[in-house]
Length: 340
Ligand SMILES: O=c1[nH]cnc2c1ncn2[C@@H]1O[C@H](CO)[C@@H](O)[C@H]1O
Image (cartoon, rainbow, N blue to C red):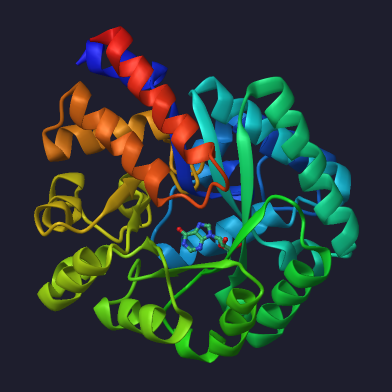
């Protein structure tokens, strides 16, 4: 197992499902909480954060998530947060990451869209230069904020169009937030060349995934674990090569699954559904991408070659432009050969 752990650590990887504010390290969260002490429920002591990040259920998770979002108050906070995420990804040998960013939350708090996009783009350049990580953006609609959030997210995406933007998403709760209402916004984003990557089937059933496919033109699905309850849907995903971004520990910590050993990833993989493994909100869930790979290896019974294939799947499912995918696949091949 130690061998596999070090193989995973050195393996060049791609991360496809990781949230911006949800990636803030305990140090950064505590630093921001101290800066805004008295106006935030977030503990300013990193040692107390683990307890703060114990979630009763998904709704509680979103409540806590939004309290951390509230700590991001100016474009300097955005710049620092994003650059530090690049550092952590680089440390894990993540070479490419699509970060789910929610511009609506910041714009609503008074950070101008232009300043927000400049801050993430500055961090993107810095992360490439200093940590060798290629960061890209998925701009997601926070579902709980409804159509005004959809409108604003689309506006920022199309008007600012930062260089790193590759896709358009939809996050937050699924219960009480039907996917079809967002169709016109996804239609416009897709017409402008953005890929469609909504969350679906994380906290509700397979019907939400069907909606995401039919109404939002989903090319990949965030989470999508409820597909395991629907044979026809699994066959559809397999036949059409529509991948799921699976985040095992997240599902445990938000109590979407009761036990990692019963995680649907095994059913999905057995049915031929393309999957990648991702970390979602790593410090909040007490995980890292490396740990998610180790968990997937355990659940799926993978050896080093199987783990390398998992990394290749993430690269293939990614929206990395140009010859970037081939280059990263080449890095994985070279690493595997050298370890051989
Ligand atoms: O696991 C997750 N599922 C859904 N949304 C999430 C998750 N993690 C973070 N967010 C974030 O929650 C906010 C409120 O909608 C959004 O910013 C979304 O990106």
